[in-house]
Image (cartoon, rainbow, N blue to C red; front, side):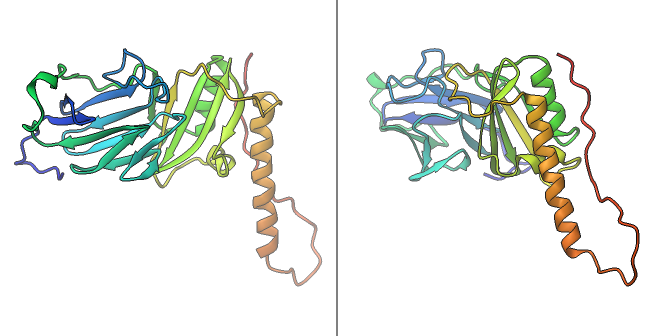
Length: 260
C-alpha cells in the first residue's frame, strides 16, 4: 500500500473468524482483546484483556502486541509489532483475523455486523501516553515516571525492532525484560534510529526482580556501561613511548536530581 498523491484513502475491512466484519477508517486504531470495552472483543479466556491494537494510517497497517500472555501471530510467526498486508493471516489464540480492501460479499448477511468506524488517532484505552524519544534522553522519561510514582509497563521500540520492557510500580522499576541494551539506551544523547515508547496501564505485574531503588538502579546501569566503555578504550589505546602521568578516562553522565 503505497502513499501517492493521486491515491484515494479508503476504509478497509477486518474479518474475524470468517463471521464478523469491522470497518477500519483511515488514521484510526482498533483495540483487540477479551474485554467488552475493546473494539474487537474476543470472548476467549486465553485472550488478554487488552491483547493488541491494529493501526491503520490509510496506507499501512500495523499490528502491535500489548505484552499479551499468548502472543500475536502473523503468518505463523509471533510478533511484537509488524506491518501487515491484505492476505496476511493474523492469529490471536484460536481466532483468525484477515484484512480486505473491500467488504467481503461471501459472508452471510445474518451473521455479518459492521461496527461504526472509530475516528480517533489514539491508541487503546489501556495506553496512558506514547511518543518519540528523539528530542530528549530516555533517562529523562524514566526519571519522570519515577518522580510521578507511575505504575505501568514501558515498551520501547528502536526503529522497527522491539526494545526493553520496563515494569514500574509506584514509580519503582521492579522488572525488566529484553533489557540487554537498556544501559546503552539510557546514556544515549542522540538516536540514529527512531526510539519510540508506549506506556500502558498494568495490573498484573510480574514478580519483583529488581530490589534496589530506581535511582540506584539507574546509576548502577550507567556506571556499568561507562566502565565497559572505559575498558574498551584502554584496550585500543596506543602504548605510550615514554612514561607519563596516568589520566583518568571517564564518560560518567550527570543524572538530574530526583526529588521524592
